Image (cartoon, rainbow, N blue to C red):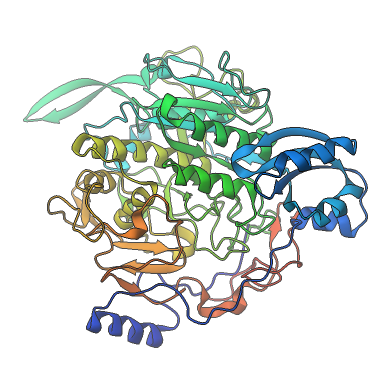
Length: 607
């Protein structure tokens, strides 16, 4: 997707510079607790019951069958489902935690359901897709190395994600020696009945994502030479090792051989992950998939399911989407973040191009990576960007991607008869890399403390330690580029068992990371909703980092300096008044939202 490029500041600056400077100066001088909310807020308008797709179907008198997710009043789900069945419609599945069910109904029934007082909302059971982009040709063999781990500063870390369970909700998993470490990886198929069975991946995306996270790289071991203490040493290196090679992968299949599936399948998988989190030791959910935003995040079933998982203590990492430019014109723009990347509490990740180097100063955000803000809610997204361009992981031999794209196959070792690995680009890959780093953070923290990090704390650490890109704005990069070494170092020092209001960082730290002899400063900011929080936001345990707080909601920030209010997005509101186009379909000029009646701006209005 592509939009206008607004003059949006990075970190502590805003278009309304004078006002924000005065506001920040007042905060510093008086050093008072700050309540992050606006006074005299008008009552929120009542949200429509029908999402955009269903509303348009009703308006054009479409009587064809509609696959819908029906959200009901608490304890009325069974009663509404029974009425739907008696009317001759078909109930496909129930989503108990969301007080919802999925059904196939006649188009003429939408009005009746909308009028039913027991029904709180109806959403289309949208087709959800994997978020990979077209990958360019492979680089020269001379560039092949453990590039992702080196770029993130992970080559020397002792942590490998041991005993951390990661639910990969995707297209499945094709077993290989790279995931054969005896870690009891699990597989459940939600394109059918959700039962465990023989792992398979008829598309290939899920296998790639899973092994970016936890692949051992066994079939990419190569002998390399290095010079140390005046002597030449030869060692074996797994070139395509994942970020957290000892993490446990729980594969929840929701996508078919074409990389597509129903939102309802993802809802079932998310509910399964939450309800079995202790048995399967799931601490992270990776969602490298998405669909266009058709409604407010308050009513979006996928967003509600993500928020439910986060409240249960699971870190949810979601891809931002690959809608960063107009497919017809190639013009880059804003507001292309997909659902569930618009979920407030999710860690939403855009893609980073490393340009084949460990040096972070040449990193850029590819055009395809979706920029913020999130449509309808106006939330500042993505939260950060991570390596996602031209990444190599295991290829699923039986998958559609491997079979149809021979140019993306990559040999693991010289002399191999068949390419074991595969190259993909996209925010899917960036989310996977981030999930791997989160696994290392959780392991590092658990190694030092008894009480686990909350999802909000994990997200704050990732933003605080991110390395800002000087070449782009906050709605493109979020807090900056993923900094694995910095995030792990800070996670290892934060004691989550500390009482609210007390210092919880156990030991001094320097807010920069040294990579290849070069020092890179951390962002030292946290974007809370649309507000940039800086200063000592992570020096003590605060209500904001609690498990039950929805990211971006009103909280009291102790004596933390809050720089401005909604300063990240809104210095030129008229910029967000054009149209958003998803692929070939207009998301359209109806049903408003924070961003106005239309949503994405194309072009390059302000530089």
